[in-house]
Amino acid sequence: MTDLAHLRSDFPILDQKMNGHPLVYLDSAATSQKPAAVIDAVADFYRTTNANVHRGAYTLSNDATDLYEGARAGVAAFVNAAVGEIAFNRGTTSALNQIAYGWGLYNLKPGDRILLTLMEHHANIVPWQLVSRHTGAELVYVPHTGDYALDLDAFADLLDERVKVVGITAMSNVLGTINPVRQIADAAHEVGALVVVDAAQAVPHMAVDVKAMDADFLAFSGHKMLGPTGIGVLYGKASLLEAMEPAEGGGEMISDVQLESSTWASVPHKFEAGTPPIAEAIGLAAAVDYLQAIGMDVVRQHEVEITAYALDALTAIDGLTVYGPPDTANRGGAVSFTLADIHPHDLATILDQRGVAIRAGHHCARPLARSLNQPATARASFYLYNTPSDVDALVDGLQESREIFGVA
Ligand code: 7TS
Image (cartoon, rainbow, N blue to C red; front, top):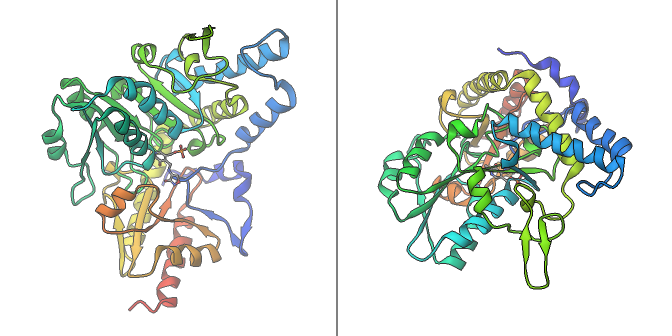
């Protein structure tokens, strides 16, 4: 197995006991842990360079601006975007709201359709519902197949010239499914629709190239890819960002302000109203450096292997059902499951007593949970610091749960 165990010592939080057991962190789909390089980059910034950006009458502010803009360049290169195509914000949720409110609100009208998938996180559903209330555009959903892939036949049937935007997750945070974004984009573009990619789970775990995907817009969060909380990324094709309205107004995003109206700063600054997440952007750049030093192909390979190991071990447990593709070629490292009729919250509580952290619930994807007839599932999710012994601890805890609940 691709052995990244030597990296564990880079993550100070992992070196502790939880309820008397070594911490086994299996909730990286919710948020990842941070290596010392990221923690230090944030602390060093506050210790040595902290000042507001883009207001530089003095050296410290210029230095902070250089670091902030350098972070933008690093993040842009990471996903093969041009520097001006990357705007920083609070996270995936913010980015998707910016797209819905900056593009959707001004470009959708009654009779238009917003085509989403049943796999979407609420962050790629609710902003479109809000915009649909304002514009009269209709929401339509692509279902998934029995083997947890996007139903491409249904997609083809639903895709016509009424569809103006397709919103799709590159990787499901519940099923782990990796969706064929390029294929979806090509089909969408043929009917003149834009493609909005929720890459919150993809960018941290596999090489993502916005050009190869032909994404029109793409969103991701720093905190799921070893970076700080409070920093996210909006990518948009340059021409679309130029034409798009800002969803937020305020300082730093204007060219001029008159009493009745204003003109906007150039992209990407018109999408960064107010003081941006400066230290967080610098921390994210450190996370990108850290991931690049390992190589995203290695990150992905490790995840494929640990997920395969986990799927084998989990499906060998009597009464356990996994919700997601069995083939690791088509999935990432989020593994959702139920165990007989034990409530997922009970599983999470028993595992917690053994130091194993998993998530239980609907994972902010209620329409998907409903389509699975499972209001709640347990979910283990992996990242580069997880080892087979973490999976073993999970499996031991689940076996113990079976005994506690007397599952035959
Ligand atoms: N999209 C997907 C696919 C996600 O998995 C998440 C967060 C978001 C959007 C929202 O990201 P945020 O950084 O703006 O909050 N997913 C999860 C999860 O699976 N468990 O906790 C958060």
